[in-house]
Length: 127
Image (cartoon, rainbow, N blue to C red; front, side):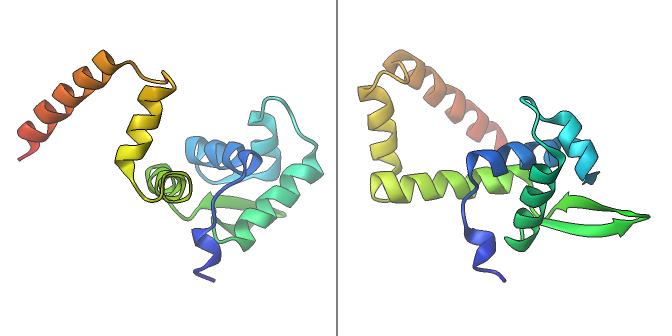
């Protein structure tokens, strides 16, 4: 189900995915132990199964318990989430996102200039 894998993550789904990305393949109990604030075992189990149905996780029976592993990297999910945000909130314009960050004082213009210089140095070294 490829279309399902394109859906964005809810806050709770993201929290759970972050545990999986950090730990690697994990059981329900292992994920539950990592969550703060804690969630009920059945809630974690339900969320892991939802993520598996959405094709975000794959599950494999290991002994008597299922282990869940990510189907994509955290970096890939970040790129897709950011693209989704830019498309939905800024009409597909990355420039409008940056302008919004400046206008709402989420980033200082001097910091943006510093980041631009750093980016240029990094790109220059990778060419």
